[in-house]
Length: 356
Image (cartoon, rainbow, N blue to C red; front, top):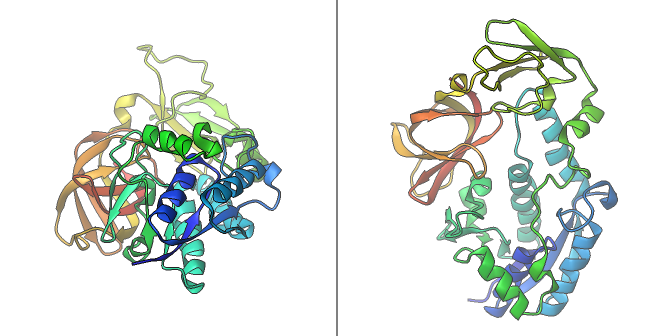
């Protein structure tokens, strides 16, 4: 069956090859690049971002090589509201957000998919490294590039209209294919940084928007060890950049244990104090082959992008998911997503609220 497919083309190698594969399969494909900034030069320049003038040109050239229609959609206002402002407000509240996950949720698979369906498209295709079959999301075979974690917030309805053509390919295979197809982005570097922070200085970006606010750095007993210029510049588990001159008695490093935005206090301590076995998470989404677990579900959970995976028991209670880990985890930060797996299959996700 021939489908009308909207291929989201970021200007990178993955989305270009994804669009090419869908077109080669005989589907009616239209390429679209998302303009995410009203002033693209205020975002990252060069080949490391996904919101630049260069990227839109690379996407257009790829569409020309593939032989598909190409358009640019202005999503700048919504991106600023749903991703950039959300990022700032989350840090101001003492949480650590994942802007790529929020962009997938609010832009690529809410705003774009909604518009695509309204225009008569059957599905949206992207270059994400993840597998999807019958609306069920699974990990990519390329574990180093797997993006199922940042897609774990999608609903079953959104996954039903999503196509990930790179699902069974490694990154090396994608680059080789791009070269064979004559796509100029074959050797283009991946983007790793936050696309809307032009110089990569997250602390400086937040300080410009929230203002410097000096506060104490304390140990677990409450003793003041130093000062900072804004609690928004820290995340749970952070070791570097604490600027504490006084060493610990045993010489071991300190880590950020908690962030209290109301009192503007950052608490630090030994790595052992970071260990947690109990997590509470909100905003659950159940998008896998099983329904919301009213009884404890034995599964695996990933707590950060490209982070470790832990065995756990997850249970929905009201609007919260209670997670009991089989072994202690460290660096668990409020605002990050907990994504649940059965083997390599995504079961659902929730946003971490607290851990102990």
